[in-house]
Length: 128
Image (cartoon, rainbow, N blue to C red; front, side):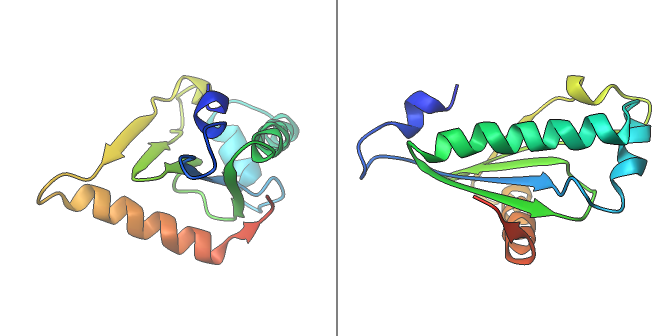
């Protein structure tokens, strides 16, 4: 889905940044249990996502970061949009909705997500 957007001309390509939970984070087994998955399966799924994003990095401006905190499992920033999703205990995680958060006048939600995203990127390990 992202590939056509990342393959545009060099001056026109968006900057994609993705935060993923470190597959070796101490809290991963807890999260796996909350979403009804084994820790091994969740860790493997994260590594698969990293591999697929590595392929996208060949055609665009892609940065992938591993974080160790659990509040938001998937956070993606594409230029001026932030996409967020979360898992909740008792909720099948792969059915979790993903929300697109954009800047609007007088909207602290986007500013808050941007601040959290940037803080997490600054504390995370860049792997791609």
